[in-house]
Every structure is written in structure tokens, then in C-alpha cells.
Image (cartoon, helix red, strand yellow):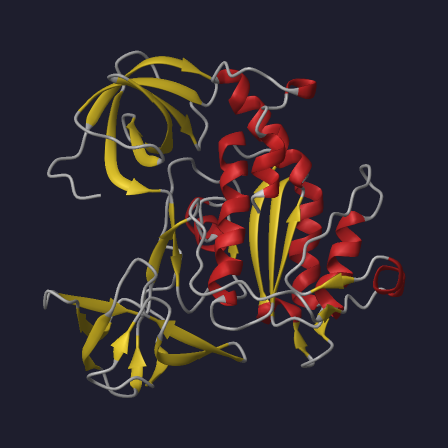
Length: 374
């Protein structure tokens, strides 16, 4: 999107996490906006546009929003930061690092608190692999750093479509993620700077190349699963069960014993007690393949049932994007979404507020296709 001015608007209607905004300027579906309260900025997303009025879902508690509250649009979609430092971190559904938020806010997380996802101070030992003059396309490797015990490829950002020529690359050394490590030019000789961090909109599939046919078996380490309902790498499976049946315990066992490189856990709408148990357990579990703490190859997206319902949907998309990013490096990634039923409940709630025609049990009619798209 390349608009000269950012759109603005005011709230004309509010119902739960859904607000209607009369706006001036140009906006697009999925654009991020901020509701301006006296001392807080609440993040929200455009989900429907009708004429000069738009419906937005707010990712925070909407207490204090009233008629005429100003809204500022950003010209950006809901994005995540991708780069070194994702592993061993715990994020919320909007990729805020929860441990850093807790250090600032204390026991009770403040609404409207948004932090950079990746550490801007930590330095990474970068080693270039591409040379000046190389022709690159999105996803090609420029260099690499070591993250945990993995080779983390620094790739040409996936926003860069077409071919680019590398004109400059920094030498080996220790750098922060925000430092320029390379420069490329396109066919029009327009120059672009490349950093170790890149951004990607979570609701767009992140993929370059062709899908590989699933042939290799996924070993979960649980004999009854591997024998009776064996899985393959590149495939998917569902683990249904009532509350307290042991789904979370099974998920921890699969994370510990699966023959994969990276584990991405998206806790979507889980009870706070279960999430706390997961956060306490994962750092103590040992990776049986490398004899290192399991958290060193794990990234956790945490959105409990007490958090705003709108962020619940976003947490699953964030987890999928993380998994796609590491997959593009050639790593085997295990993505666990717990639970998709609560994700579906979040969609049902938003669909009802949008006054959409309901399907079975009041779930949106597009529920099946939305789940199948993953």
C-alpha cells in the first residue's frame, strides 16, 4: 500500500469488541488502526467496509470507547516480525513478548501496551554467504546466524517479488537485527536495504517454491499414535477430546519426542491454568535428540480465554506464520494449535456481531473452509 495520507475516523457505534467507524481517506480490508483514548491506544483491525463506514474488531478491552472517539489508520496490515530471536520466547496473540510486558506492567497486564517482538539490543554473529552481483529472489539466503543450535538463514524478505541484484553485503561480525546487512537493486536500479528482521502480514500464506509431497513419517514418540494413526511430515491431524481428557499432556509428549527441528505452540483461548502449566513445564522438559531444554527449539504464542476474543483468532495466524517462516529455511516444524474449537468460538462471536447469516450451531457458514485453509 502506498497512500500519501493516513485515513482518520471517529467511532459511531460499539458492541463488545466490534466498533463502527466513520472514516475519511482510503482504507483497505485487514488494515490496522488505533483507537485513541485519553492515555491509551487500542489496536484494532478493519474487517468490513461499507461506503464511508468500516467495522473494526478491537484486540483489547473496549472500556472507555464512546461516540466520537478518534481512530487513526496506519496503512499497514496485521503483521509479525520475523528474524533471529523467535525461539524460546513467549508471545501473546499480537506478538508482544509477554515476559517483557510483565516486567513493565507487573502482574496485571496493561491494555494498549505494545512492544517490539524481537530484541533490538542482542547481537548476532552474522556470516554472509551471498556475494556482490548475485541474482536473488524472495527467500534466497544472504547469510546466516546461529539461533539456539540451529542455522538461522537470513533471507531476502518475502515482500520482494521479482529478481534483485546484490550490490553490497556486510562482512562477518556481530550485529543487531535492525542493522543494515545488505543492499539490493531491482530491474529499475532502485536500491533497497536489507536487515535481519523482516515483516509479513499473518493472513497471507508465506510460501516460495513448490509444495513437497509428504513422504517422511513423523515420529511422535507415542506408540499408540505412531502405530494406529501414524502421521507424516507435511500432513495434519486432529486430537479431539473433552475438557480434562489429557490433550495438553499429549501435546507436551509429542513436542518432546517428535523428530522435528522446531516446535511452535499456539495456545488459543486456553484456560489460564493450563497455559501456566505449559509455561512452567516446557523449560524443564529435555529434548531427547539433543539433550537440551525443549524450550530452546520452541516458540509459544499464548492467548488465554481471559484475553480479548479478537486476539484469539490472530494468535493462530501468528503461529502459522512462524511455522511457515522456519519451514522456508528447510527445517521440519511441528505446529500445535490448542485449541481450534475455541478459535471457532471466537469466529462465531465476531460473526454474530457482524450480523452474518449463521450456519450450524450459529457458527459462521465459512467455518469449514477457514479451518481447511490451514
